[in-house]
Length: 269
Ligand code: APR
Image 1 (cartoon, rainbow, N blue to C red):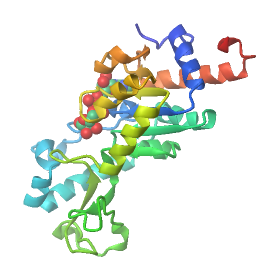
Image 2 (image 1 turned 45 degrees about the vertical axis):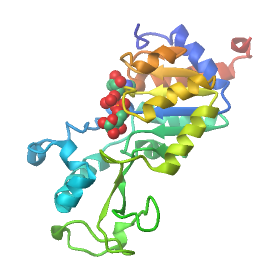
Image 3 (image 1 turned 180 degrees about the vertical axis):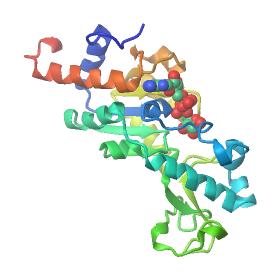
Image 4 (image 1 turned 90 degrees about the vertical axis):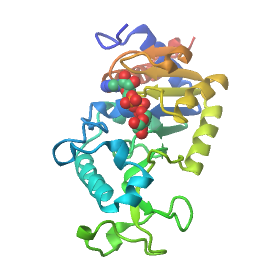
């Protein structure tokens, strides 16, 4: 059943009440939250010049070893696309939760940085952030971030070099064949195991290890709430599955939380 039309549905109001009562909210997001910002998916990004390349052949450490300039240039192109994109009402609604609840942490699989742009403060980008760079050898620990604005190099010759060890600098994103950053993943597990509510938005729940987090939260007695136009494997552990685009549903959830806060408390009875 779609939640999109008319006044907030009963399930939106009930879910909003559960969120309003949360002391440790975790929001888990995937590509769907950025859909309404027009973020090209992996495949959409491969138009024009890049159409003949397979992203699975570009976003790997072996591709970078083979041809660092090709991979660097592809990311340069994608960074240019993403730099123009803006958060949508779904991102802003999530950022607004911080004003309404004692603790809100966002775990995102997206590398687009839009949660930060929308104003969320505590964001764990478990797949990295496309605007950041790190040393390919992670010579000072994983990750060794490098600020390339402080480096001088000739872009025609490929990526810049790490000022510490001379290895190439690469985008700070998780590639195929790679593990997720250890500290970020540990924190994501810990938060999921101790959350009282987990709001899962716009993820297909198919890419591990992040796909296991809603199940961990559920087993740890958190209330799981899903926002997605389509059912997913997470739907079976969701107390409420709010069907529709997050840019429409989440503002309705915020409005319902605020309406509940200004009520005399009747909704809590
Ligand atoms: N609002 C909310 N959800 C939406 C919307 C929308 N407007 N539009 C689509 N969705 C849902 C889809 O129904 C789908 O369930 O978003 C989900 C997107 O699924 P995926 O494309 O598989 O994205 P995600 O779950 O983030 O994938 C995880 O896989 O490709 C890798 O590293 C990449 O981070 C990505 C990871």
